[in-house]
Length: 331
Image (cartoon, rainbow, N blue to C red):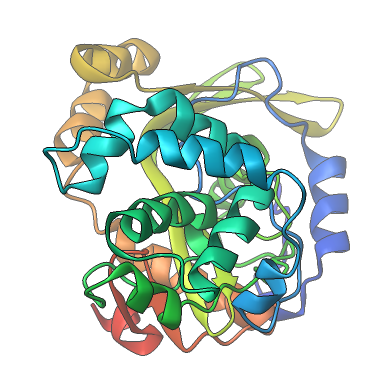
């Protein structure tokens, strides 16, 4: 059995979110029978679309929760006096640190305002900077190692709100098996956030048909991206061997299950289990897991997606290093 051709492979840049979603609804049902796996989360929590001009827009919103934030900060700074490492102070007072983190934007607004007012010297500034970096997540546009002091970090900070990342068809395979696989993976693993897109790069190793049921055996690389200003950030990802089960009924094909490899010592055995009698496929998936050139397809699909939604980033960052987007594509 071959899967029906769900999407036209010509001119993906012209596909819109509404068309994408309607096609997914008509041709297959999301794999609701299995729980969503623990895919790595993005570093930043939900942030509204659009962009703010600079840090002042955040600082101006400080609320009346400042007393609790300041009290928790002072407890963190109280010990261990023999250390000058801000991480030691945070580790010694995890409860107070978590109290500040739970304050969310209130804490971020207050601490940034402390930087603005010049109350961020020495250890206090370093602890405040560490808390701000955690709260900002992917909104922190200052790479580690590009500053010497917490105040210098603040002066370089230009937190931006992410751009909307709408749905779009970004693959051109000419193969209905791959078309169905992409659509099934998107329904199962894409993050449900308007400012994040998950780009997939699957490698199909084989299939098995029994009656009206077909299994596709593949390893898929998935990476999350969001765009802040002129920079596209890679915020999470995974590589998973999977078995996608599809059932044909009444002229339609539905994805009924996606089995994925388990972690650690169960990795290889779990692949052999879901491959069943197809031992050759299982061994190929295991041996080639770390050898496939997933990144080449990730970058190709990312380029196609960005063109489809009319976004042209100038830089790429994984929050540790930053480079020209063109250099990332060549890397």
